Structure formats: C-alpha cells, structure tokens
Image (cartoon, rainbow, N blue to C red):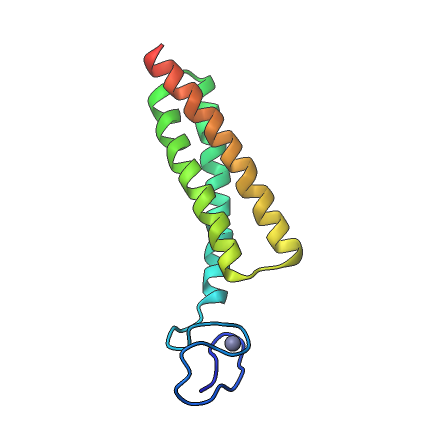
Length: 118
Ligand SMILES: [Zn+2]
C-alpha cells in the first residue's frame, strides 16, 4: 500500500507507513493545509493589529474579542504549520507572522479587558 504522504510502498495490511509513520488510511492534505495556514497566519496578524488598534481607540469590547480570537488563531495556525511539515523560509515567515499576531492579540486583549473593567 502506497503512503499518501511520502509515497513509500508499504506491505499490504500495514496501518502506519514504515518510512514516515503516517497513518495509511488517512489522505494526506498537507498541501491544502499549507495553503490554509498561510491565510490563517494573515488573519491572525490582522486580528492582532485590529485588537491593538481598537484597544488604543478605546473600543474595549472589540479589542477583547479580536484579541481572544487572534490568540486562538495564532496558536492554532502555529500547530497547523508544524503539522503540515512546511520547512525553510515559508515556515519562518508564517511563524514570525503568527508570533507577532499573538503578541498583538495579547496586548489588545489585556488592554481590552482593562478598558472594560477598570
Ligand atoms: Zn510515508
């Protein structure tokens, strides 16, 4: 049975690929996931910027929501990037984008909470 991820030809009846440990009955969606993670990284970055910007414009509730979603999305995107096995420059850029998105989201979120409750 051919591995959908790496193409290694495994003996019939194998459950996991002997070469890369991929579960053979699961279709490999790495490429699609990689494309999705690029969009998600952009979204995480934008949400972080919006969260911080709205916080400084005294829009506490918007900052809080954007910050919360941004934090979740950054973390989710980073694990997705690891799952897809993207390497090199693209991975580095995605990680930088999601990290900046995460930091800005945290700033927006905390400042949003402060505006709401202080
Ligand atoms: Zn494999």
